[in-house]
Length: 297
Image (cartoon, rainbow, N blue to C red; front, side):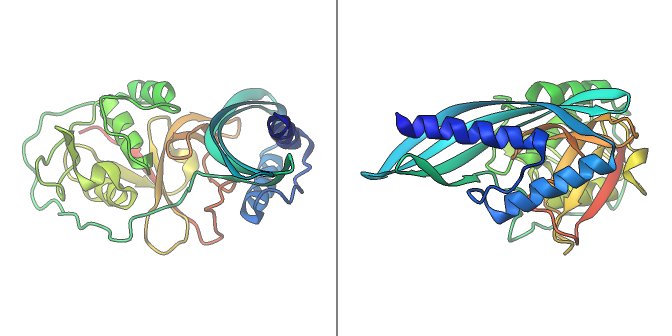
């Protein structure tokens, strides 16, 4: 089991780097190293520091490539205690990773989570042409946030689990807050999940972004100019490449000491993550955001 000892040592070294700023390990990808460096800069700009980092790992799968080489897939959960001048909060993340171990030494290690994926064929969405009569509702932000906290690192069996699950998760949070479904059974219309079927807007990041800005009834969003105006229960949409193809959505669950959003998300399951995603391997300098206040219907 020497390979396991090597993996444990590697995980511990990586975890220690979060509190020491020693991010030079060539065994992880250049994209990951760059993302970690951006994270360090972001923390400093917010007068924030990771004062404690905890990590737990679980082996998912092990395959012998040859007599000297092991390929190991594992699940890792990280927890960071982050301190600002007069505030503490805990950020958490879960990801699947794969390590290549040769002669009981880690050669390569990388994440199996792919942030920023989007559909190559974006479905069209029918715009609202008239406002139908729907019961009025008041969006319950507390219930939406409670749902985001309950299910950020697991799957609610009442819904289908998708490989790219970010928008499905956000839709569930919004529905838990009382946002009403409409449009069934037309997948290009409205926003709904029913009988193991769903609208494009329920599951596709790009389509939910346009639904929020275009809907005149039911679930609706009011675009805000910058993130500090958001409150828990609101939504942020991400276009990592700045090419008009919106790839990711998160829900605001709290604010940091400077009044900036902290978010929960799926696919790369995250809790209380800083809103701007500069620590993502999908980040580019061309990134664009949309900030939506979820409004009562």
